[in-house]
Image (cartoon, rainbow, N blue to C red; front, side, top):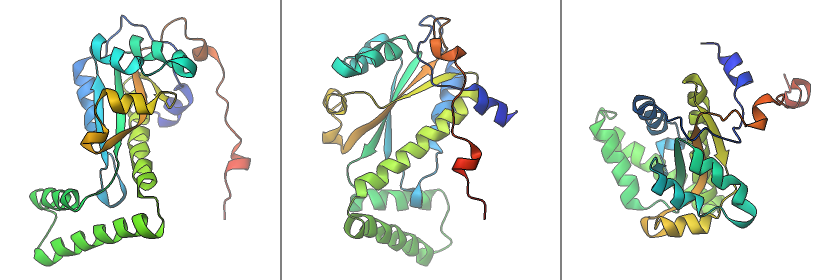
Length: 217
């Protein structure tokens, strides 16, 4: 695998071929990539809505009207669309749920180690909630790490992708009853195969130069 070539070739797909579908085994692989994505203190503050049926994709596309209308066809013509959601808060019950999962996975050699993990997580949560004052922003940055993992994994499988921030998040939250479940919609990702009519496929990649981007000390 030539990772540099993959990153040079991938681009944000603007139009999908609605007749091409991603094989189930590859979708399963991409979902496992999402499940295994890293996050600070392994907080895993996310939930993923995977729309594969036309009806499910329509529920998302209907939240892309007005100034966001140009994004609706991407959703409707995609093979799959994923709504990446982030927790609105971190409760004590959720923190204990994580510790229980760590225990089941065999990460603790004794009760003292388990308690140390519990206290470390609680300390970070207190820091971002009370000192930084924006725990939701911190959690959302973790969700975008998961997005990045998927944007790297998709082209390895020859799958095109489009991260979409242009949608009515309040409408998506209402459509999927996210707030009552303790989540909000952060970003939408469409997956599939590019259409021959996709103008962006032929345009050169534009990035700032390494001289501007890097300070090597």
